[in-house]
Image 1 (cartoon, rainbow, N blue to C red):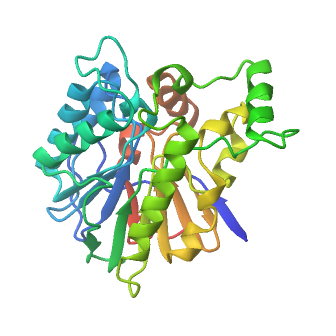
Image 2: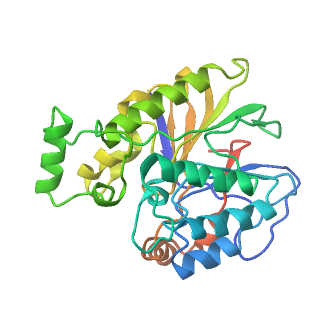
Image 3: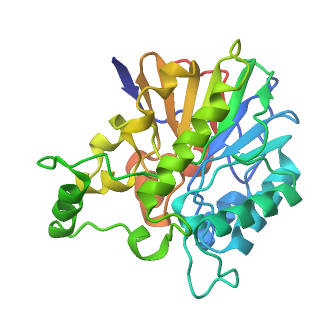
Amino acid sequence: MIVRADLAVAGPGGAGYERRVSTPRLLAVSDLHVRYSDNRAIVDGLRPGTDQDWLIVAGDVAEQVADVEWALRLLRDRFARVIWVPGNHELWSRAKDPVSLRGEPRYRHLVAMCRSIDVLTPEDDFPVWDGPGGPATVAPLFLLYDYTFLPTGAATSEQGLDIAIKAGVVCTDEHLLHPDPHPDRASWCAARVRESARRLASRDPQLPTVLVNHWPLTRLPTRVLRHPEFALWCGTVATADWHRRYRAVAVVYGHLHIPRVTWEDGVPFVEASLGYPREWQLRERRDGVAVADLLPRQVLPIPER
């Protein structure tokens, strides 16, 4: 059951200055894309509201490993805990990146880098948020997609891809995100879903969860895409009930560059992205609100609707 959809929820720590608050909070950002200088400046200005704030970084920090490390190291120096999940951009293999690894080895390299700077990843023990709105197990996930968010008129993934190609909508992942050593991205997704389900099943069942993934866990957020065919690269139907199955009090994701909060079965789904400069600058002109004042986004305690 879908409950409602709301506008984006502002967090406590606008970029470029410190906005101190009295209550520790679990915060989130995603899709920082720091290779753009305007985005890099916003990230450089991110501050916590208290010394106990945690920050979720839900993927797409950058394409080059060095840029990912720069951003996560900076944020870890400021926040009490930083939790990262990969997006598709971190997994791209591009000639200009000195790190030429592909697929699973690239992901494992990023995990090792995060561990070296004390940033938690999907491969680490799930931390428990004991602050306001908790306790809750924060579960960083890496799930990918399997082409099951089908466009209208498609009954299979193959038909969906054919429709997307004819519409001129093809994700850059098809050229830069390699699944090595898996035979294809859908197979890698299936492996990640199995592993994530295993780990979630082994958590403390008495605690609710905050589920974190770069790609949406349900199809609903993709319904507003300007190019609906792009949903093929946005998730998997295998996780459609995970917010219920794992007693989520909140879900955090990115990827769509449509920052907002939607509600499903009483659970807030927080899309925490910054996005490309052309996107957030357009929103600033349209809404008259500086994007820096909306970041990071508050996850717990859950803001009033």
